[in-house]
Length: 311
Image (tube, rainbow, N blue to C red; front, side, top):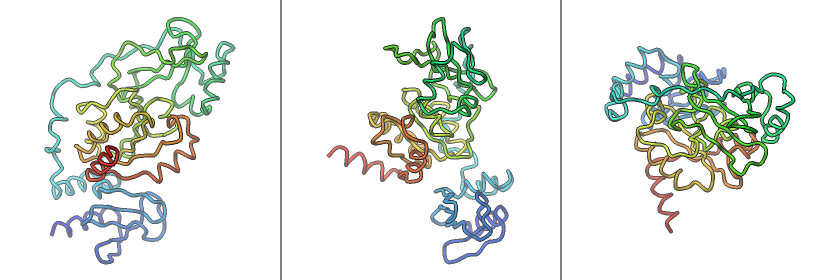
């Protein structure tokens, strides 16, 4: 009976369908192909478009993304997820990251989003050497400091949901032995949350230059991902699929993050970064190819990975 009710909701959301055994075919709302190419298996809780490869391992995501609030409520009444009781510890009333004070950018900050000043030539050349385009500089509001505490450093600001600066990354562009100089503020922020689309898959990476390459992504700024972090809470609440793409030399940190995400039943994939120092050093087309081939990780697979690495 539950499957029939779910099927009815999906038909209300996606329209005309054709059922063949345990699979139901719909018109894909992601690519809008004229044929019924979106295959949904309610029993296995999976879906895939055979044209654009839009896919997932939680049919609820189709209802959440393309349905109405009422349709999602009806779906959650059938699945028992409507109040997130399983993860109640993430949604209590204790103080949160988003209540932290905002920051000011350094007084010496000069934007590179417009014409490049004479003092910014070397900063601009450094960004170009890292593969950044003018569009990247505009989107990420990148600038530099020619003097002051952050002299000769690229500045990449992070904006919270309200558009206020929540953090910034300061990276040397002239060979300083200290590559990064961080502001005196907590790193436990969702970097550039203002630009994140929680309805799309999210890539977790190590640093900001990795995030620029990866697209819809969050850098963890070298720290680990706490179980009670604001990032975890928003991933779980929005039921966001996650791709993990940390540096090859950060296996232990990556395993801890994977373990945390699996604890909260996050749909999880691992991107192979081997052969490169990090995601930021990858050509973007290579990253997208590897993302397409990312390995799905569940609890059983995670345990197997750990057993093999211990041998």
